[in-house]
Every structure is written in C-alpha cells, then in structure tokens.
Length: 313
Ligand code: NDP
Image (cartoon, rainbow, N blue to C red; front, top):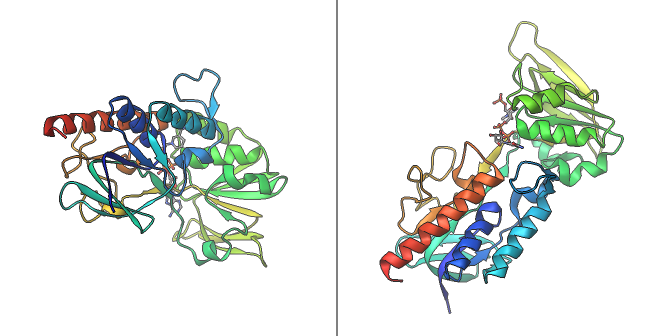
C-alpha cells in the first residue's frame, strides 16, 4: 500500500535538512529521503569557514550531522533511500523510492543538489578509482607525497588544489583560460602556494599509465599557431569543473533551464507545479553556498506550510 504524507523532502544537503527543521517545527510531519550521498556534497569537504555561527569553522560532515540531529529533534522522519521516479501530473504527488515504494505527498520539496561534472574523456572511465577522482577531500589521502593535477579554474578547483597541496608533493592546476575564474582570495592562495603550479591555457587530451594513472597528455594553446602538446607526470587526476543539477527525475513535470537547473518563481522556491518547491543547488546556478541552500530550504518549508493551510490539508 502507498504511504501518504503531507510533506516529502528529497535530498539531504543543507537545503533538505533545513527544510526538514522548519517543516517539523510547523507540525507538517515531514519525511526526508537522504539520497545516495547522505548529507550531500558538503560531506566531501573538510573545513567550512564561512557558515555563519562557527567563528572557528567546522567540517562539512559535522555541519551536516548537526543539521540532521536538529531536524530529528523536532520529529522529522529521516530515511535512507533515493527517489527514482515521480508522477507530478496531479496531487497528491507520487514519488517512487528505490524503484519500489511509492509515497504520496501533498507538498514536495526538491533539494537533490548537483553532481560533479567530468570532461567526457574515455580515460576518465578507464582510470576511475585508479587515479581519477572528482573529490579531493575524499581521495586526496591516497596521494600523499605524490604528484596530482586538478582540472578547473573556479573556487572549487582552487579549494581542491590547496587541500591537495597539504598532502601531495606537487599539484598542477590545468586551466583552459589564461586566468582563474575563482574569487580573488582563492586566486591569491593558489598563486602564492609554492607547491601549486598553474598551467594556464592547457586542456587535457588523455591520461597515461599501466593500471593506474601515471601521466596526462595536455595541449597548450589549442588551435593557436604555437599550439603544443605537453606531458606531465601525475599519480592522481582530480576534476573540479563544476556540477550538473540533479533534476532528471522531475524533468517531465518541472520546468528547468537548458542546463537542468529548476526554474523557480523569482524570489521564491515555487516551481511551475503548485505545492512543489525547489531549494538548494538544484535550483541555484549562481550562489551554490551552504548558507544560501539552507536559506532556500527554510523558504521552501514555509511555502509548503502556507500551501497546506490555504488548501486546508
Ligand atoms: P565554476 O563554474 O565556478 O568553475 C568551473 C571551472 O571549471 C572554470 O574554471 C571552468 O573554466 C572550468 N571548466 C568547466 N568545464 C571545463 C572543461 N570541459 N574543461 C576544462 N575546464 C572546464 O565551478 P565551481 O565548482 O568552481 O564553483 C561553482 C560555484 O560555487 C561558484 O559560484 C563558486 O564561487 C562557488 N564556490 C564557492 C566556494 C566558497 O566560497 N568557499 C567553494 C567552492 C565553490 P572556464 O572559466 O574557462 O569556464
């Protein structure tokens, strides 16, 4: 038999847990499914220095555990499992969990986050788990005193390169433009770090190595008169080139932009389907911060509460 709830939250980053705190305190008896990566992307980060209320910083996993406990304290029902299909054609909305159980819900909060992007090279699959990673903080430990490369020039890439510089003997940053896109402070930290060498205007053609990554073949100034191939010796290849929003399971029903970010009515977490709200990175191509995700999770839960009371549900 299907289970029926008033408020279903899918995804467990700062947006999902904050929505659960607010929904639980408003007596909506929320059920939250944590998804494949309980705690979301922040569980793959070490230091979090910019979440307000932690003057000396905290870690991603600790922050997520605190948010989860806070939601549970008010009675949020937090469960392990992933939403695998949705039917939002009419209310109550139906969400299938792990291909089996169907939950019917009056309101739905989508906080499914975003997933790391890869370059699309065949070698990324070939060396998956053998030198290729999209998470420095998860896998950096394996590269102590070795050489690694980080692809990307944004804040994530800089953060990963700095983190890896504390473990590895040498860190290359492979940046396709002649400049870093990251914030000024992160750029300075990278450029002043003696262990990090930024390879501007370089792109990756492929990886080399017997069983494990041993090197990368790059092209410098592709398409220019002075284009040249460059070979670097590395043991680890880390991707940090952005993320794809996890909106696929609601695609037929919920409007997204061309990348897949859920479109919301500006200034609100409301989607094109009444009673369905989006919070956090799945709907945020711009800020992508834990605190902004948490804020939008709060908004989504408040909207869900208003929706239910207006409908008398
Ligand atoms: P960004 O989109 O900001 O940066 C992606 C980087 O990867 C860019 O340098 C981009 O190059 C490069 N890139 C993308 N595709 C390719 C490709 N196919 N080949 C080579 N390079 C590629 O993503 P981030 O994940 O770094 O950051 C996302 C957001 O999160 C940003 O707003 C950022 O400020 C924020 N953030 C903030 C942090 C903090 O405040 N502590 C920490 C981490 C992220 P190009 O510039 O050429 O497009």
